[in-house]
Image 1 (spheres, rainbow, N blue to C red):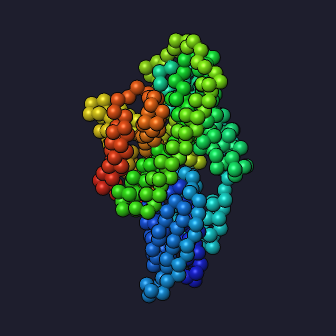
Image 2: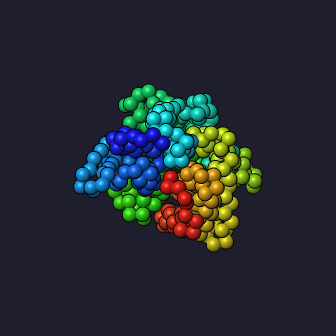
Image 3: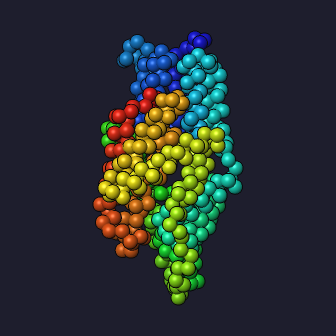
Length: 408
């Protein structure tokens, strides 16, 4: 490998950290990965990452002779496909298959690369996400159809927000507000849909269940700054979503009082769950920008998460099922990462997303604030807390039993 000066190596590490943050990697994984890469490049360094900024400190021999870089950034979105490609690039750099100059160019190309799938495909996957989630928890085709249609409306609003910064700042309020208006309007026409549940399904992509899980994982790993700030941000987003939904439903109820409801005439069959899981895993592949040739491993993780959590949950309760499902996904992703030399977080995230109780937290807030239950569930508040704890514990046990070889 061609010898490069310390400044070039430091600049590469900083740009690598920025790119990983944009991919949505957790602070703990980024800090560990950058520490390993820094030592690989013959430097010493320490790193402090949070959702809105990061600090990098480098030195050569004297730890008091430091180079410090501080940068403020916006929270990143999950892009697991790009994360996978960045990790492969760093692997080539470390093995001598790629020079530093080529690695810098490749990193710039990956950081600015467009999504793998066109907007039309993303819109279809938003509809699949809302419809599949509704199919998992509801037994009525009308809820599924309404959720899918309103998910498309949410996607169109999201596309508009990417071109208008002021609209983007209101997205977490405006999207559930419009979904609440439309869902209540559909109900007023005589279609017996579960209005709060349909609204929840239509804005499911905005529910920060994964952020809550990552926040609790970081707090349990003593990443207190990043975990606490991520937790506050996730809870604030939940409250904004709930406020928009309640306002939309209330306003629409005033304009369009509920008519005579038609009894549910389109019940779903008993075998609805597995098709819904498959469709949801396909939608996650597109949403996370994962190349189609690598999608099968994420689908297997989703199948493991669902099957193990259901099997254990039926015998020992939902919390035990959540723990078993999370541990099974963690073990599978770590084993896959060891064999394929890939980041385990890419596979584990796709499986964990099926387990995260973000929607349950939304239901808890809706019951506390609005006084109505989205779905008939007893002790939902304590249940949501225990599900989060069980999920984090399952991941911790998986990493202890089969530690991942790679830091991402």
